[in-house]
Amino acid sequence: MRDVFVYESLRTPRGKARPGGGLHDVTPLTMLERLLDGLRERTGIDSADEMVIGCAAQTGEQGANLARTAALTSGFDVPGMSVNRFCASGIDAVRTAAALVVSGYAGSVVAGGVESVSRVPMFSDGGPLWSSPAGSIHMGTAADVVATLEGFTREELDLYGLRTQTLAAAAWAEGRYDRSLLRVNDLAHDEHVRPGQTLAAYAAMEPAFDDPDQDAVVAAMRPGLGTVRHLHTRGTSPSLCDAAGLVLVGADLHHITHLRPRARVVATATATADPVIMLTAGQSAVERALATARLSADDVAVFEFAEAFAALCLKFQRDLRVDDDRFNVNGGTIAMGHAFGATGALLIAACVDELERRAARYGVAAVSGAAGSGSAIVLERVP
Image (cartoon, rainbow, N blue to C red):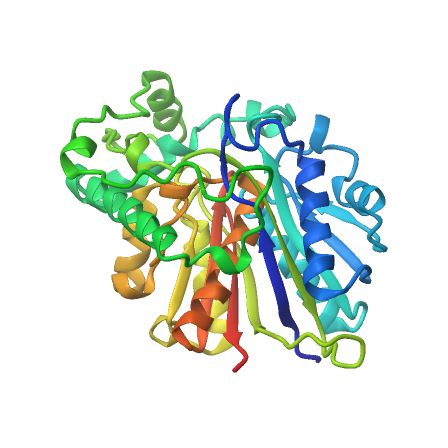
C-alpha cells in the first residue's frame, strides 16, 4: 500500500451561528469557493482526482452535492461528492480521501467539510432519525448522562470550560491559528472566543439541558440508568458556528508539484456507541485507530478531540491518561465553535499545525457525532 500524506490545510474562521454572525451572510457554497481559491493560490494546484466534502445537514443551500457544485463554480477541475456522518463528517471526508489514495484509485484528493448552521439549522434536513427514539435524545442530555455515569462534578465541568476558553484566547493572541487561516470578508478570528472568563461566571450559569421530557425518553430507553444529573451549561457545551475547512491529501506528488508533505496518515477508524450515551464513540474510534497504528496514547504528542461537552473530554483524558499539555492545547470547540460537518477538517488543520510548532511526531484528531457515531485519524509529522 502507498503512503498517504497531508500536503496543505486551509480553513475559514468560525462565525457565530446566528443572524449577525461573521459568516451568516456567506453561503456554504461561497465558503467552499473561497477555500478552493485559497488552495489554488497557496499550492498552484487547480485540479485533483477527487473532492470529498463532509456536511451534516445536506438540504437547501447545502444540498445537491455541494462538493461538485463548488468545483464547478470555482473552476477547480475535480469531481466531487458529499458525505455525512453527522459531526464526524469532516474526519470521514479525509478518511475517504486517504482510502482512495492508499488503494491507488486516486493520486490527489481535496477533502474537508462545510456547515453554515446559521443558514441551514440543525435538524433542518428532516431525516427519520430525528423522529426515532435514538434521535430524539438531545446531545446535551446524552452528555449529562455521561457526566452522571462517570461521576463528574459540576465544578470539574466548569473548570474544563474555563480551561478551553483560556487556552483559545491565548492561542489566538499568539497567532497559533494563523498558518491555516483564510480571512473571509472582514472576519479573521473565531468569534466565540471570550478572553477574561472567570470560574465564578461559569458557576453562575444555569443547567442547559434540564428537560423532564428528555429525562422521560432516557428512562424509557434505559430504565436502569437512574436519575440524570443535569450539569452542563452553555459554558461547558460546544458553541454552534459557521465554518469550512479543506485538506489536500495525496500520494507522492513531487513529480507534479513543488509541495512537500506535512504529515502522513498513519491510521483511521470509526466506531459506534450506545445512542443514549452517544458521544463516547469518538474516544472509541481513537482507541481503534491507535491499535491499528500499533501506538499507545502515550506515543501521541497532540490530541485534537472535538469538545462535544466537557464530560466527554474529562472522560477521554482520564481513560487514556492524557495530560493537559497534550490535549486540546489551543482550546477547542466549546470555546471556538462547532460547525458539525466542518469540525473534523478544522481539527486536522490544528493538529498538523501544532505538530509542526512542537516538532513532535504523532497527533490524533477525532470527533463524536449523533446516534452514537465517531471517527478518528492518526497523523505523523513529516520532518
